[in-house]
Image (cartoon, rainbow, N blue to C red; front, side, top):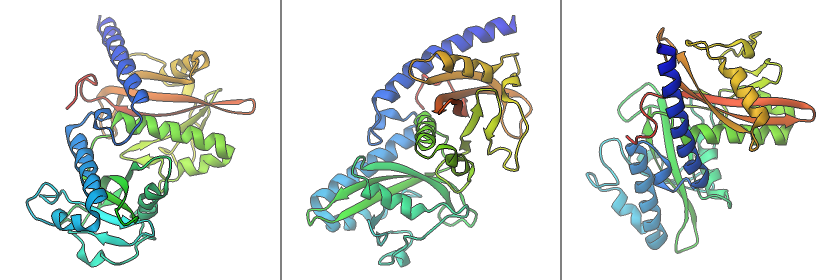
Length: 311
């Protein structure tokens, strides 16, 4: 009976996944608050978007507004910081000593090139907004934790290209982060071939964020990329069975073989790291092909709330 109940809930969840993912596929613009599930994330995106519009109209004169304590721009641990596309800091109310300095080579504790990624948003002509995920200590703290920074590139009335940003600490991964992660990984594999595998396994790359990482599984079940076991793994993924007997990797692989768009969603029950009780997980997988070799490229995240609800 328990298995039948789970199968029903899995069916309902699958329908909600399809609905939500269809919306995400249509709304690919990072600047659209509607693609995010968490209210704090939507508020951050709106804040930075509004700040960008102000700078587009007023240029650096808008910085005065951004530095007023207690305003919507500077309150508690919420603040804006601004760089030009060379990596020079133009505004940072929490780190005024950074202003005027070129910090293009700044990296976090994992070696992630944070400023180069931020500046890259300003140099990208195809997309003028994006996210950078890295480790940083919160204000008045010593130990770094995950920080997710949303950035928008703008051009001032004087023609200067700037990158405005603000971030949140230790947020839950958004579903759009998961899909983007896997989509970028597939694109990298198609561009670089098997050389991409080392990049995907590197914790300092852009393919490791908020506890999410990419794994690559051959059609025969070999774990080609498995960041959970960086020293190497002999695990055979097609034998994986979750807490209710679901062969979820085999299920994903078989469905990928039939998927016209080369992408599938699978739910399964698996314990979170450090936990013994299984919880619902959501796997997003895509097909990547190199010559005659076919791979499953995927990532997953815990579903701790009904995903058809926003919170």
